[in-house]
Structure formats: C-alpha cells, structure tokens
Amino acid sequence: MPAMSEIETFDYVVFGATGDLTMRKLLPAFYHRFRDKQIPDTARIIGAARSQLSDEDFRERAAKALRRFVKPDALDEALVQRFLGMVFYSSVNGAEAESSWDNLTRLFGDDSRDKIRVFYLATSPELYGRICENLATKQLITPSTRVVLEKPIGHDLETARHINDQVGKFFAESSIFRIDHYLGKETVQNLIALRFANPVFERLWNADAIDHVQITAAETVGVEGRGDYYDNSGALRDMIQNHLLQVLCLVAMEPPGSLDADNLRNEKLKVLRALKPITAADVPHVAVRGQYGRGSVGGDIVPAYLEELGEGRQSDTETFVAIKAEVHSWRWGSVPFYLRSGKRLPSKVSEIVVQFRETPWSIFGSKLEPNRLIIRLQPEEGIQLSIMSKDPGPDGMVLRPANIDVSFEKAFSTRYPDAYERLLMDTVRGDPVLFMRRDEVEAAWTWVEPILKAWESKSGTPHHYSAGTWGPDAARALIQSSGHAWREDMK
Image (cartoon, rainbow, N blue to C red):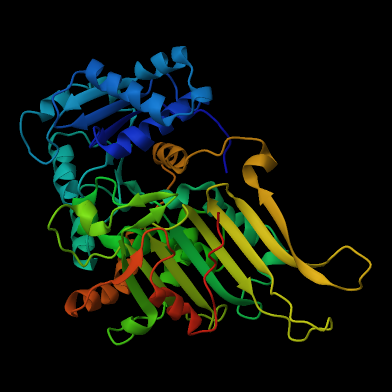
C-alpha cells in the first residue's frame, strides 16, 4: 500500500454537502489528509446542496464540524484556516435540470478540465441517475472524472440494477466507485495481510482446522434522528447486504493472483456466488430478526424503537439480524458463517471470530478450550489469539486459556486513520481495489432478497429484545442448534 505521498490536484464535489455524513466524516477526513500533506493547496472541495449558502456560510459550518469531530490535538488553527481556503459551496438542486446548475458550472473554467474531478453523491440513491444525467448535460464529465456512490445501492435487486443502469449511461464502470466504508478500515484491509503474508494462518484457513466463523457489527445507539430512512431500510439492508457480506468475502475468498483490483474483486464475487441460496422455507431456520424495546444501555434508560420513531408509529422493521450462512466451496465445506448486527446492543464493537476445532484427544485429563482468533475491526483495532497455556505453579500440568493480544495502534505508534481518509484519496487516484464492482452489489442483493421477501410476505413481528442485551433469544437458539455460542463478553 502506498505511503503518505501527495496526490494530484483535484476538484472534489460533494452533493448532499449539508448532511451529517459530510460534516461528521468527509470534511474531517479531507482535513486529516491535508494535515498529513497528501492534498495540495491547489485542490478544491466543493459542497453542493439545495440550501442557499455562501462560501463563508459553508466554511463556518465546516469549521464547526472540524472542531466537533477532529480530536483537539490534531487541530491547528493556522492549518484549519488554510484548509478552509480550499472549501467552496454551490447552491444546486442536483435532481433538477434548472438554472441552479449555473452556480456549479461557473466554478469550472476551461482551465480546470485537465484537473481530476470527483463527484461524491451523498444523496438519496433515487437521485443518482438524474444527477449523473445533469452532469453530462452540463458537460461537467471529463476523461478524468469519477463518480462516488454512497450505499445503499438500491432497495432490492431490481432497484440496484436500475441505479447501475442509469449511472452506467454516463460513466464507464472503471469510473464508478461504489463506496463501502468498512472496506476502508485498516483492520479489514489487514485481513489480506494476515492471511496471505502469514503462511501459519493461511495453511489453517479451511474446514480442516476451523469450526465456525462469527462476524459481528454491534451498535449501542438507536436510530439517531434517521428514523424515516432506517424504517425503510432495516438492519438487513443497512448492514448485512453490504458491510458484513464484504467482510465475509475477505475472510472466505481464495488468494487472488495479485492485488490488482479486478483480481481481488473476482475472488470476492466467487464467494458471493458460492453462498448457499436461502429459500423462503429456509428463512425461519437460518435467519432471525429482532426489534429493541426499552432497556438500559451504558447505565441510561433508552426508549424502544417504536418510541424513537414517534408517537403512534407501528413498524415491523428489524433493528437486529442474525443469519447462518454457508459457503459451498472446497475450502469451507460445512463451516457455518454467522452474521450478526444490531442497534442498542451492550457494546459498540465490530469483530471477526475464527473459532478453531477442538483437539481430537486431550492428554491432560480435562477438556481443552479450542483456540480462537479474534480480529477487532473497531474499537481498538487489533488481533487476539487465545491459546492454552500451563498455569505457573508447582501443582503439575494445570492449563488455562491465555491471550496473545496485539493492538495495531500501539504496535505501530500511530493514529489509525478513519476509513474515509483512505477511500477519498483512492477515488482521486482512480484506484478501485477497495470499492465494490457492479456484479458484487447485485450478487449480494441476489442472496439477501429471499430473506427480505419472506419477512415481508409472512405475518408476524420481529422478536423482541430489550435495549442493552445481545438481541433476542431466538438468535441464541439459532447458533446453539449447531452446538455453537455467540461471543458476548466484549467490552
């Protein structure tokens, strides 16, 4: 992976610039890359949204966002002011071909056509095609232009294909960057290094040695003012279809021929296509959905999901999902992959648990706990390997579990960059290796859609779980039916 080298100058336009994503993630990510001297002073970051704001109005909002979301020890006032000098704003209705587009086109003179242009669409996915059409009509697409699509790409397989078709009319596949910030996490990328740079792991990375795999993305928060969006999405669309399936692909894929983008994505696609199809009859046995009620999270009593939506609202939208998946390949045989994601759980944690098989015979006179590899994606990114070790003392061969624990931030004595920092710079570089290809997105929807349809077509509500617990009892029953148990001792 390239070091902190300065990239070419660019114009980066963010549609939906007044939204939470821009303020909370994108602007701080740009600032950190500028602070580390990756972004030249000649670059421009242009916010685009319908709000009537001046450049100074937007810069004032950007400054507040930096002071809120960037750690104080990384803020340098002189540097902040230099950074804000690169920030501009254009009031434009991206979905309408009207005169407001003149505000944006005026920012691009003929002398900027040789500059790299990136258009980041942080808007509703239904607007992607229309915005791209307007970019083409206004002649803002150059040979070095890329477009970034935020998830979700569609609401189901049909709408995903429609969006891909619309955007594909105006941009070649090589210029379309479908972003999944999980792929930008350093520890997710480290999966590739862990497996393919360390033969000790790769030679055990198969059904002969591995009993099962758990992939968890847990949040302590509720819908956080995103009730309308979330109620039309749910945990399966919001987390499983994209984030967790992408992590599963990196865990389960075969070694690519190289780190070339298409080689890597070809192997991920093979995993998605090797997933055992789930039929409507299978759904009750392999998938569990839940919805949180009132409970205690971090010592605070929090409202139920329906209360957060608003008075009188009723909804069957799931805030928790657990799925048992199988990869039908020679490497993985009958190894189950358990995917789990939910809101209002006890801890904010994303991790992969690789549970190795038990020893076939113990010479120590007692049952041994099998080895377990835990890959922490967040927080405190790192790796923990549990082993059995002799308990120090004169009482003979008494064994107990011990952990080999590596914190990457401590090991490398550096700040771990946010996922968006890497991904934003990769779009400027034109490097698609950490982005999803069209066929990946559609393969993921193909696997998930039968679960969605089964839940929508059958009566009944999601299983209840109290906020602050690890989901409904049905999720424990799902994994226990195969003789396994969720890891629930995360801090």
